[in-house]
Length: 130
Image (tube, rainbow, N blue to C red; front, top):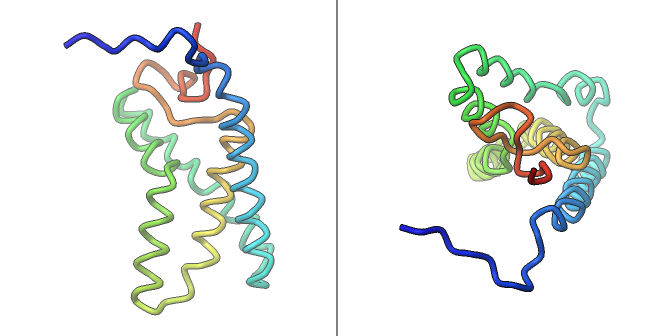
């Protein structure tokens, strides 16, 4: 099966990167604002904001496993699933960690850290094509 070729006037992916980064910033700041509304401990925020980056340890098992583990913790699907499950279960204690997790992902995207490709840690969905 041959890959589809982009339309002649379609924007290059590199033109979309600033928009995706701005979107990440908006989501990150919204999550921080929501966290502030919860009036939870900023010490908790500081303690957990970098927790998803522990997933970088997956790269000890190779680029493929590293990318899978990293992407699993840096996709909005994880906090959405935890948030929805905890809401359904009536457990409000997950709200603060979920918002911190979302803030982490959004801020990562804002500064250019995206979902990883198997080819290497620096190859992301926010990398400019070479």
